[in-house]
Amino acid sequence: MPEDNDDQVGRQLADTVARLRRSMRRAARASAPDNPLSVAQLELMNCLAAAPGIRPSDVARLLRLAPNTVTTLVNALDRIGMVGREHDPDDRRTVRLTLTPIGAEALARSEDVNSRILRTAQARLDQAQRQALRTALPALVELIGEIDTYTAAGADQEPNETVTDV
Image (cartoon, rainbow, N blue to C red; front, top):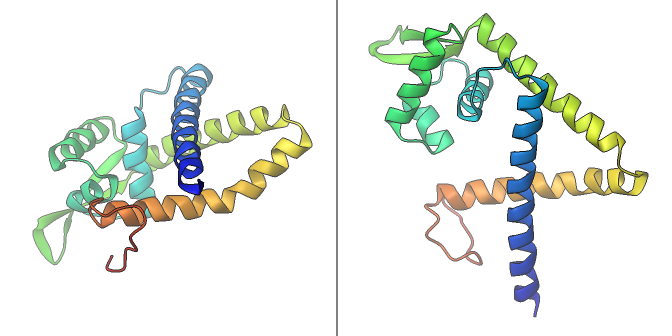
């Protein structure tokens, strides 16, 4: 049955993605042991790089974190000079978050480490495996979009339902 095959592929894909994330974290820690930033902090900084001036509540929504978790992350990053807070000129009650130059540099170093790890690992694969990764990338990007759409809809729909109001 195709559904059984889809379930099996789904389980294998979830396991593979989880193992890849763990492997990347271990390799990044080994490659840059002096990097004090957690994965959560780096994800938040990535969010700020993509949307400078974003509000903490929007960060929480995008990263699917509790607002107090975002506050804790921002406070820690602010203390070490990686993130800045600015009041919105139109509404002084609203705080906007930005990466500082130090934060942008730290994020770039982290991205460089990840790129180097992946480049080195891919170089050890044969040509067919490297081509398979290149071929799979668009489908993986599309899959991420579908997962985000499903999540934005509240993840209360059956997987075969179409999400139309996001």
